Length: 259
Image (cartoon, rainbow, N blue to C red):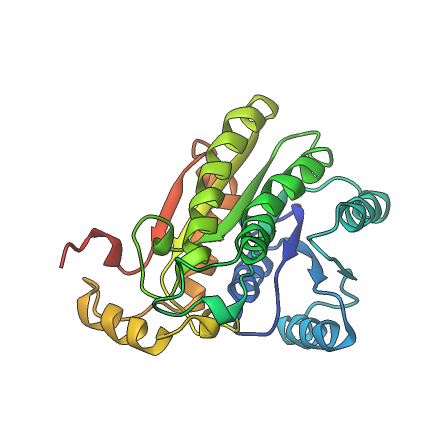
């Protein structure tokens, strides 16, 4: 019996086998969870997601397209999830977006309104939107996890509007935890260290960030996806039954360093 035996949930955000969501699903599946998946709209994104899920060894996976920026699409996905899979026990929110043209040093001040609001919508609001719909499928309680980054707390060159959106995500996490705790649903966020994912590579100077973290983090290395995967497993499992509303740093200690 694994930590997640008998538990079923939704994992969003697998773009390929380098995604945080992929590592989280890998840890969940290892401990007996049943995972359902969503992918970004389009044949290319479906192909990438299915390829990654196939690599995870999931037979006949439940995979559907989801445009997180569309309330109608969210309604349809969660209605289908409930109809076809019944109740769920967990939700993994691993979705974020900001126009890469504005994720460069010196570009934050001039960020256009539409770029700013889109980043906030996709990277932060969707956690609340998904949590609202997922909670309706958790009659016996459950757990949710979203992915953040240290740029939500400190200004990281080039992270720009994404840092603002992640700060909103972490605040959203606290308010969700306050309300959903009354329904025995726990809501947490993991602040993972930098990892070479598709979205991370859009941040200007990302290679320099990796080099700096490896030099300055107490453990003198960058994280692996499995570090976040196993930490997420803990938060989603009953082992973390008393933990909610928290931001758990999985960054090899980088966030404690002053210089």
